[in-house]
Image 1 (cartoon, one colour):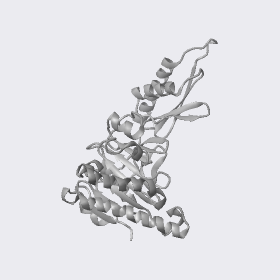
Image 2 (cartoon, one colour):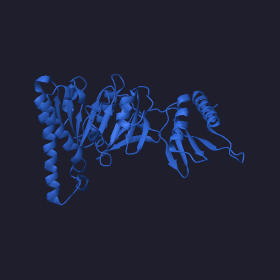
Image 3 (cartoon, one colour):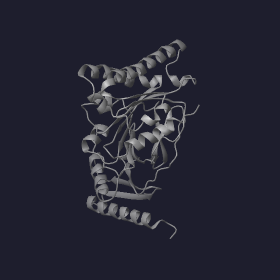
Image 4 (tube, one colour):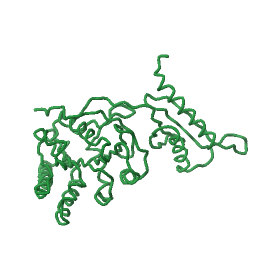
Length: 336
């Protein structure tokens, strides 16, 4: 009776569905032994499922098993290998911690199974965020910005729609709003960020250093491009070519210099973020409900849509569900 009854019943239903799936996938070998073994374990926010086929099985068969469990239960994490078996977690409940944390090179981006999740832009440079209208993009960006403003990070913002951030423009190191009449100024703004990056590159070379983290006096610089598709659609073909050349340069060189991009889009569209560019975004965030096209563009696989307030966050090979705390405003003042 000390347990939350709803949580208990959810876990019980998940385990029952796992057992049913095991019966469907298991057979008997010529020695009358079951060809599949499965274990479940209770985690704080999930039920962990470990599975092993005794007969030779491909990873595709394991994937089908996982997808069947997910079909009848809840969101699952990606398959992971460990000593002869594969495992995944089935989400039971995940509640966001309403706190922000940031260091010189990291910022909290959500709450995962193991607590706060951090974007480490030295290890995973550049962040791409995709969310359709009403799926929590603005809330997510505000949460991240609140964290960045507690650190010594310089944040430049291109406000794609001049709606969410105009009243907070004084909080940013540099701010510009996107209007058709000043699109050339937006292009110059991004070019200035690139030029600063190249200046730091020359400075590091003169000091005999290869990475900005080796000099503690150097801080990180993050350029936020809100509504990337809107920005590109305001440009002529020639303007777009100039703009994208600067973006590519920042993607390629920014990691060592401490100059990173945070880009938001309403849909995953390869016409705007081509494969070579996408591969340089090492942190990817897919929020709420989304199309298969957006999922494949971001993670090369059709992930299950989530409720508003949840996000798939991928860094490197790890992709996991995170809960995002609700922030209606930019609440944290920038440190002096």
